[in-house]
Length: 144
Image (cartoon, rainbow, N blue to C red):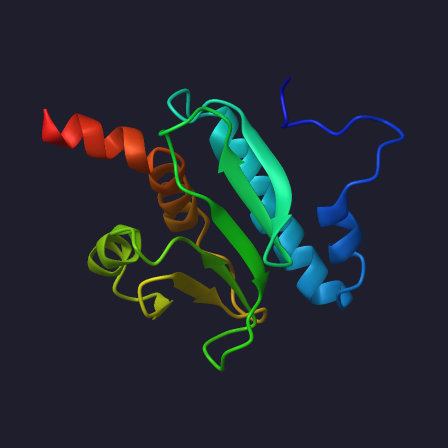
């Protein structure tokens, strides 16, 4: 089943959670959600993704085993920004992103942070999302 589309009449816990957020934050997170879903559709190696809540945060994971790592998005509870995109801190993704995009704000090895009053760097975010959605398959191809 393609998890990219919502079924009419079904409740979506991610959308239910986002409804509780202030409108500006909700709009920013919905835009980030759309970028994740769109990037997944345009990335054949990722396959279908599942949208769910993990640790109380909107989360996106590949359905196909060993293809990508989970992406989470949420309001930022640090002082680095207003909202953030999170990945597994055991991955090398944030280190790679930090080298590729030194102008962005990162939190340790697990997140990239954004401010509501600044435009989302869409090209960079699309590239980061694509890397996360193909993280494990990408590691296998790099080892060959």
